[in-house]
Image 1 (cartoon, rainbow, N blue to C red):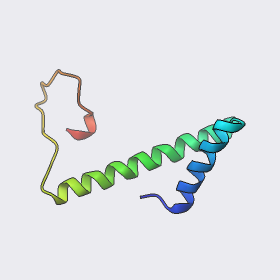
Image 2 (cartoon, rainbow, N blue to C red; image 1 turned 90 degrees about the horizontal axis):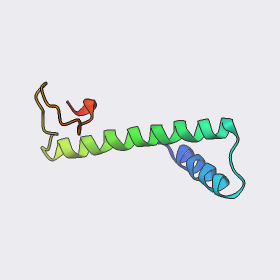
Image 3 (cartoon, rainbow, N blue to C red; image 1 turned 45 degrees about the vertical axis):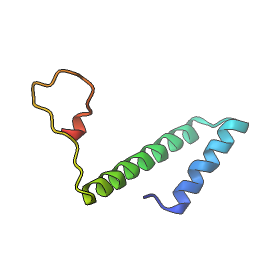
Image 4 (cartoon, rainbow, N blue to C red; image 1 turned 180 degrees about the horizontal axis):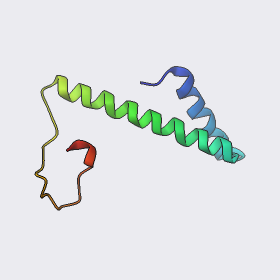
Length: 73
């Protein structure tokens, strides 16, 4: 996961966004921090599922349902 400093900054930017708004630079920083948080969350979740012996279902190359992230294939 992300460090406590990064989580605190995410929360600080969220509070500021609700009260006075964010500058363009702060919006970019918030977006980058949120993306890093989501990626860390996904990695952690996948590791937990793998430790339990669970893996995402594999779809054939001809799967056309468009409901799956390419990262899971």
